[in-house]
Each structure stands twice: as C-alpha cells, then as structure tokens.
Image (cartoon, rainbow, N blue to C red; front, side, top):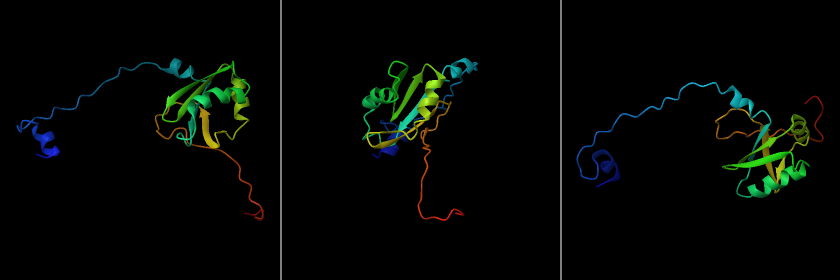
Length: 137
C-alpha cells in the first residue's frame, strides 16, 4: 500500500473524511505599547551562521562597542540575534561603526521593526571604491 493511499484511505483501508481546516481567530488588541518597547532594539543576522559562533558574538560585540554593561544580547535562532540598548545615543554610536563583521564574516544589523520576512534583516550598506573609472560613470 502506498503512502498516498494510506493518507487518503487511512491505515485500515477505509475511506477517511478529511475535516475542514480550523481557523484561529486572534482578537484585536492595541499593540502600540508592545511595539514601542522595542524602540531601542537592534536586530542582526549572521551571513554565515555555520561559521559564526552565536555565544561568542553575543559576548564580544558589546565589548567591541565598549557597552558591556549597557546592552543585552539574545540569540533568536536561525542565525539571528537582538541587542537591547538602554540609550538611543548608544545605538547611534554603534551604527557609526558600520560595516559589521564577526569571525571574518559579515553581519546585517538594523533597527527593530515588525517584520516576519525569513530573510530579515538582509541588507548590508557599504561603499565600494573602484580605481581607474572616469568620474562621469
């Protein structure tokens, strides 16, 4: 007996009625205060999570930024992490240090925003200097 026939007919061979899919309805609630709670949060993603050790990253980046006692990091899984800052000024100083890298691999870091995209965050801003190209190009 094939797997597809087991799914359609059940293990006993009798035809099984597939029930309707249940919908879960979430009641509306004002999440503005919840979103505002993340206003000093930075989300990051390792570009090569197999090579970048998350525990080391969470330990070392605040030290590199000289913010050991002012920022708390958390592993979000799937190569993503977040840092919660106490002060807005600290976030601005950290972003002045862009390009972010760890263990010889790039990091994408952005301010938190409500997003469910699996590739979030995925942007890395950097300058490229090409020598020998005329200015008109």
